[in-house]
Length: 239
Image (cartoon, rainbow, N blue to C red):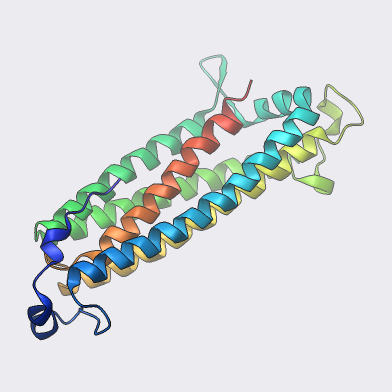
C-alpha cells in the first residue's frame, strides 16, 4: 500500500493559505486537509469491501449448496498448458495487477520526492498494465461465450455436465461474471482516474507539498488489486 508522511503537507496555517493554491479554505492546515481526504477515501473503500464481501458470502452459500458442480465448473476456467490444465489467464492477470501495484507505489513515491517525469512514467505504465488486464479478461470472456458458459438462464453447456438437471453450473458462472465483471468495472474506473492524474502531473500540479490525489488514487488501485487477489483463488483454485 502507498505510504505517506503528513509532515510534508504541514506548512503552517497562514503559509498554506498564502502560498498553496490547493489549500481549501475550510481546512486550517494542509495536514488537516490531507488527513481528512484520506479518511474519506478509507470510508469509501470500506463500502467497497462490504460490497464484495456480500458477494463472497453469497458465493460461499451457493458453493455449500452445489459443492460438486462448483468444483467441476471451475475446471472450465483453466487452459491446457504442457498437457495439464492450468489457470493461465487468471495467473497472468494476477501477475499483471501485482506489478501494477508496484508501479503505483513508485508513482506515489515520485510525487513525494518531486520527480515529475518519473511520476508520469509510472502512472502511464500502471494504465498500460490495467489495459493488459482488461484485454486478457476479454479473451477469457470470449472463450466462455463461445462455449456457452454463461450465467443463469443463458447457460447452455448442459451436454457435458457431469451432474444433469442441476442449476449449480449456471449459478457458478452467474457469480463468476457478476464478481469479475464488477471488478473489471472498477479497473475501468481506475484507468480513468489514473489518466486524470497523468494530465495533472504533466501540468506540474503535484509536488512534495501536495500529492493528495495521487495518494488517494493509489489507495483505490491497491484495493482493486487486493480484491482480485481474493477472486483468483476463489474461482481458479477452488477445490
